[in-house]
Length: 97
Image (tube, rainbow, N blue to C red):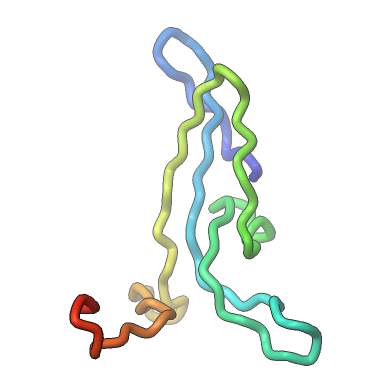
């Protein structure tokens, strides 16, 4: 996952800093000829090409702090409203509500 930058922590120790967003997008997961699948996945907020399913991982270094800012970017591009969940809820299950 590409780093956003380095944040400075108390004592002057450098910290690896990431801004990760979750977004909804289409990706070809099934074999060729099948429709693309709607997925939710994480990526670097500043690098649109980093959004992939499954998502990339953060390669943390031993004894080096990591700070992550999580961003909920599950929004409708035309209205800016948050998107409903892509998986259906079965209301017939007694614990589903």
